Each structure stands twice: as C-alpha cells, then as structure tokens.
Amino acid sequence: MKKIVLVVVLGLFFSCTGSNSSDCEPSALPFTNLEAEYGCVNTKYLLYNIVQGDNFIIIRNQIDFENMTDDVACRPQIDFTTYDLIIGKKQLTSGNQSIQYEYMDNCTEKVLTVTFVQDETMVAPTIIYHALIPKLAPGEQVAVETIIE
Image (tube, helix red, strand yellow):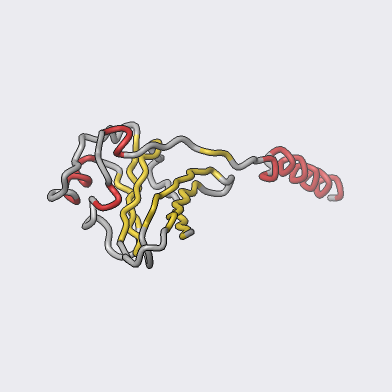
C-alpha cells in the first residue's frame, strides 16, 4: 500500500512540474484594424449602432458584420477566415485625442487593452473602438480592458 501511495505522489509531483504555469511569459499578440487593412476612415465615430452601452462584441463572420452595419460608410469584405473583429463603445467625459491598443496573451487569457487618451475639451463623446485579431478558436473569448488617461 505504501508503494502505491508513493508512486501516486511521485506521479503527481512530476506531472505538475512539467506543466508549471509560472514558466509562461506574457506575450504581445498581433492585431490590426479596419483603417490599416481596408482603408476605412475615422472609425471611432462610425459603426455606432453595433454595440449598446459601454460594451463590446466579437464579430466572427461577414453575415453578422453586414447585418449590424447596414447604414455606415465603411462596410468592407473582411477576411473572417483570418480575423475576428472586436468592436466596442465607450462613453467619455471629455474630448478624445487618440486611442491606443495592446493585445496580449497573459498566460491565463487573451486581453485587448484599449487606452483612451483624453484632452481638455468639454465634449463628452461616445467613441467606438475596434481591433481585427487573429481568428479565435470556436468558443474562445477575449477580455477587453478600457483605460481612460
């Protein structure tokens, strides 16, 4: 009996050391956008009706994209075999100077960080952000974190 317990304990020890998640290093992931890939212009004010509230969605196919964007100036044929489109909306309390993006695999999940760089103007726009990310596996999700600077 002692030998069986010892074998089980040693087996668990060696199986855990081989898959230690502390060996993982967070890494940047590639991404692009509708402006760079398809020539869309000033999308932070377009695609407004796709998302409700301060939220985001992941669009995974052309049919869904077209159904959600029937009245906008930018409706390219997106290569959804290569990309998924993350698109979201954020209500701001002052004018927006720019939007910065970072897409990372932090070892437990994929995270798109969207940073809104604000200015002093007294407008309170609702801004649309988006990123074309490499195609996700079925059911795979991405977390989106928004930061206002």
